[in-house]
Length: 244
Image 1 (cartoon, rainbow, N blue to C red):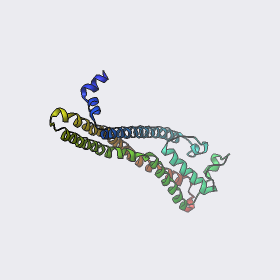
Image 2 (spheres, one colour):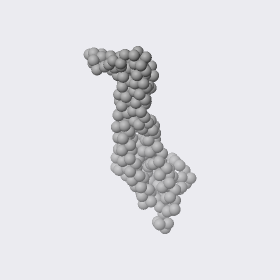
Image 3 (spheres, helix red, strand yellow):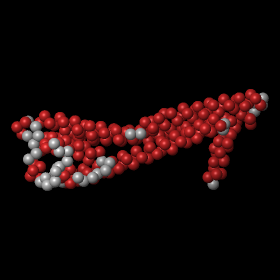
């Protein structure tokens, strides 16, 4: 049934009558489509995983009686940007307090409450948190240029194949000396297939790119707000009172 559909729709006929140059462009667009769909699916999965892991981490942080408990237990939330920001703030806190990026074994809750840093050290912690936010956003935005390129470039590549095919069709028409629809239609239909393919590549890439960009923008605001919350908690719990 699928074969009958493609034959009746003229796609197979158009591909068969396309010139070699048009067929090469169609194959190139097929490769671009494969890459853009791969990137799109990977980014959607990455964002979904990041949100899922962040929800688990935030729920655990909210119900935990010890704010540094997750850091001390070294719990893992792979792919969660919120957890990475929290960990960067805690590591910088320990590094400023004892020159340790990781807590030593045997740290008790009482000893954690005794951790005090001067207020001027908050800028260093803020810098560490902001760097981690930047790193997480770079990971989320990685490879997005491929989607943007596919969305903007595929229609022009398809148009190139169409113009090239039409040019060849008119050239063959001039050589044959028979200006009939039967002699011109096959070449023109083959060249138009290139434009169709370009649009089929560009449309999903464009929609996917816009959706992911909007999602990352919303996530950026959320991460910046969470980074501010982490810094506020550190200031409230671990800044020496006489330094404020």
